[in-house]
Amino acid sequence: MTARRSALLAGSALALLSLVSSAVPVATAQDATPVAEEAATARPVHIHSGSCAELGDVVAPLTDLAAPAGEGAGQADSAIQAESSVTNVPLTLEAILGANYAINAHLSAEEIGTYIACGDIGGAVEANGALIIGLAEDSDSGYTGIAYLAPGADGASTDVSVFIAPVIGAAG
Image (cartoon, rainbow, N blue to C red; front, side):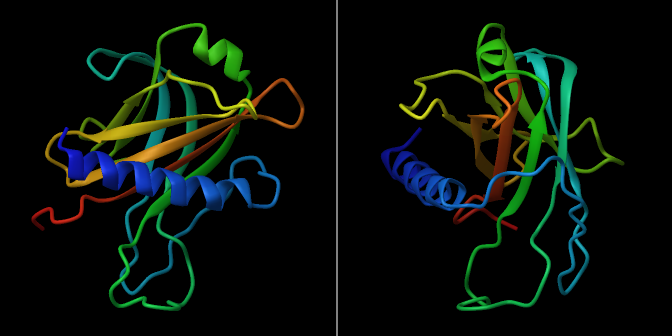
């Protein structure tokens, strides 16, 4: 990974962490229907057993990734649009970290076998009990992202927020 790409991913992670950390408490799976100039295809995303190198079965389906609905604001013409998913899964973060799991994003429900971004779940857990992982580009999709996993308010679940965006400077 180049230093520039590492810096971009780290900057993106901090910006998204700020957004997630300051958000209102996370609700369970949301109904995200994208409404943009052209309706974007929802992208399935799951927690799988195994690793990105060898994905296993789906352990927990997550809310489909989708672009935000609504009118553009700020520098909408030049901002890089990100897609997001927020889901509460009925597994503790401790249980998720106790086995090999990965978060994998798919191109669409119709092309479920085409993977666009994936990240193995693991790493340093923050003081607040949360974990942030990177999602690497897969299949030359032009997308990378991050996932933010935090203990659920009930103590028996995990709030999983996934964000993907086009790779800066990628063709297409």
